[in-house]
Image 1 (cartoon, one colour):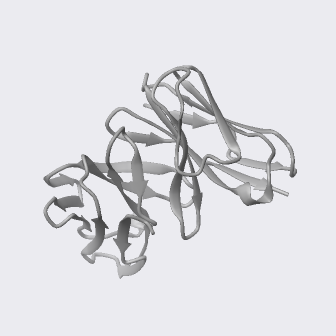
Image 2 (cartoon, one colour):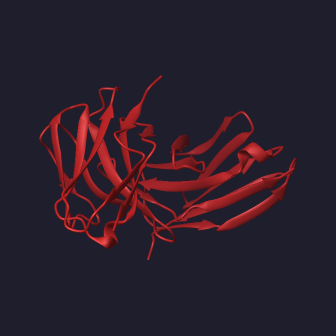
Length: 108
Length: 109
């Protein structure tokens, strides 16, 4: 069983909507990563956070260490945001354990 | 512009062939990783390396080996390819943030 659980697995939104993707993990971590994968395979790191909140453009990531939960929010979503979003927990030794990903489709 | 480069985007190999997947990074990172990605399973760690000539098994090392002779290059080797090794293979390197290659989609027939 994957120790990193993401929800939802699939998400369809209309352009302009506010989007939230959730990630729960089961062990103490040193950091939580959010990644984006576009069709064709390339993966880009969006955030790495160990506490609080980070913002980059229309993307916001939050983490609650006590609850072992993180969220990725996208404000004013756009069709170019369509991708798979993956969270990953970092424990010891730089290893990452990945969630299965959330497929986001934003329709115009 | 930092880069992790994988030698091939697509490969088709025959069962029993020895297959080499090459990964090169230009960021002087010590940590490099090989993953495979399959539908419904996410990314799973095959092997990783903390330094030149150092390697550690990940979660699914069976049927694979690796080589790290130079800091910038981390090679994944399929000793005798099998159809269940058909997958997307992704290389990554990192110090803090992780950087990924574009992936190699390998088909074993």
